[in-house]
Image 1: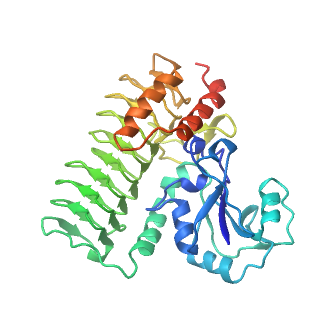
Image 2: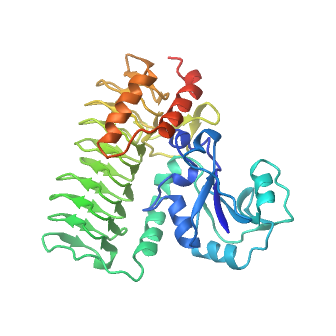
Image 3: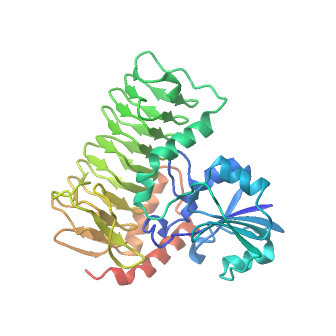
Length: 396
């Protein structure tokens, strides 16, 4: 049986999804794909944008489970799918499709727009959907607790060194093999703290859960973290971080504030980069939405930075409330740039120009090489497609 995660809300979740399927977004500790794979005990493939399919292919089997990649799984939902849901029946929550169990021919028809199925059933229990990019940090607390329980059940943490100051329950701290945590203050009263394999919490760090520091990531000395916050693998953070998610392979290694934000992969925030997460008039934050090609009311009072893969800021960069930065952009200067920065832009509040593709690829290759990851032909083709498809946005 095949597990295929199909995109839903893909346009609304740009720029994060310009370079990945929806199910590759991280919330809690795991990506959405990793959650489904663990809970269904199956390996997943994807149905996503054509230009992403070389990296994220679709693998059909004679019989398949098609899952909406923007839905977070629960044990109740997974049990229902495996034990109760009839074949060729679409499970929905309101107008949102959740899952379809069906043959390859029907699966292919469904995914290409022929959504004719034998029956439709309404899922009666609650269902968590990631509809907009800010849902990732807004719903991260509950996802962290769920993933913590999933990953640690029946397992024993590595011992927490006596040099640390623990506030709250000890069973809400879990250290994977190779994790190094010394002279830190850990507070689990508001959520668990998960330290991944070979991750490092340097001395003086102060962490209030929920918090996840994924494999081979680190907090610099004196880092201050307010949960719920997730730092994906092979990343560094320093300064002050509040209720934010870094998908992975990204550095915010210096002083400066990051709050109510989501950063993609291969990003770097220069020293003393700060984002605002609250307007001076305490009003509702509006952010750029790719689906409607305009600014959009979030309904939130707190919303910071949404940044696509491979984007960078220089030292002392100031980012306004609700700033959206696309893929492979470079921002610098001490004043606030515009609140929407299109992909492959280079500049500051004094103006932007196109970040030429060949120059952007030179930088991307050097950055990825530092993590022993090649900028291969597939990765470059994805970025080239993003460059071409976002040309119309670069009207400065």
